[in-house]
Image (cartoon, rainbow over all chains, first blue to last red):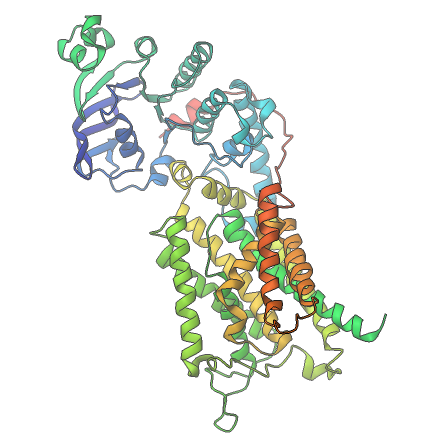
Length: 255
Length: 334
């Protein structure tokens, strides 16, 4: 299948620190890919580069065949490239439901002129969006909290809200930055189920994750990064047999 | 009621209405979009000056007045020109500052904008007559109606009411719209909003221009009611007081903005004006105003950090639609 995302020789440095240094890999359309590697390997920086929050200094990132280096973050989002954050960043003083509604960018008139002169048409679209958002919240078990400020949610609920919000934006490729971080085992299973369900809807994933059993169950290909470079790309089984990967990340004892 | 009291209360109504234009405007730029517009009062002055030189006749050598234009045009042309001038200045300042800067740096740059504008108005006497400012600006409908100057306030109140009603309706429409929701999302987290497809610069800029136009309208009403405007009326502290009013009333809530105008402009500013001067320390009276405002702001931030009327949580009751629905086919099309 064609590659949905390809990262080719990408370099990014913060001052003198090479966070990402000549990193290359590709994610086929329809896959759940993982990005693993020790802390400081440059995984989150790479997610920032793909999402557009940071600028690529050398190399190229292609999405659906096009170089997206010149695209501002909002254009990438509108093309279906969405992300979540390692530390939840919900809109705290918007309600849970509004967090979803506001993420349906491009599907409702958000102009000032629209607010004044097209209220009737906007109202109809809004009712559609609310129904859709409530359906999503129900799946994620948050519908009862829909009128609460997002800041009042627990850590786990915020994780779920981030994912629901990203789905509301109709992604083609969803970048999840450590979706399982700080999540209890029961909720981990729930999130895993959501990822599978969203994937069935035709969404591709790139997941940054430290929980290797989750990665093992869900992801192929698995990209291993170390010190800003791609060390290896393959299945978890491949990596378990790869001495270099074991040294860098898995720890020699698991060999 | 004695006539004098009536007259005084009528004046208070006008001051209150004008202040509502300020707090409602700042509620769009700061309250909803989170733009720390510390040059806010500059746009009020811009509206006032431009309305003034639109309504006044040409400056002649004999009058010893100095100002640009002098178009001698009637109300509401001066209102339109004053509001437009404020909006254009807001757009220019925003284009320079908002594109590049985050909230705190932006705030400092906007203080600098005020400083530049204030110095220009004070020292470029050919512009708006320097420190003495504009005087003798004609009042709306005054020549046509030929009313007793003491009764004019009762002509002005309905004019101001209509203008403020329009601003209120616009604010209401913004607050209850996807546009307003997008502004609030940008206020909460600009990076996330961008990562979810919002054109954050454009949204913040739009909010700043709307706020500037509101301030401009307040300026127009001020100069037309008081018939004069000079740099003392828009010292930097005035921006801080509008911020105080909005924080006390409740930012992000149009009723909070109005309540803030009432509490700060009428209760505190007029109230402290009634304190009898302390012999030998007459200058303290004006200081009391700012001291009381400071105390009230601290008290509100301590006991009700989101203001007396916090931002409303909008509730939705539309039916749940089961998910997933069509989603896969639709988004995989392209």
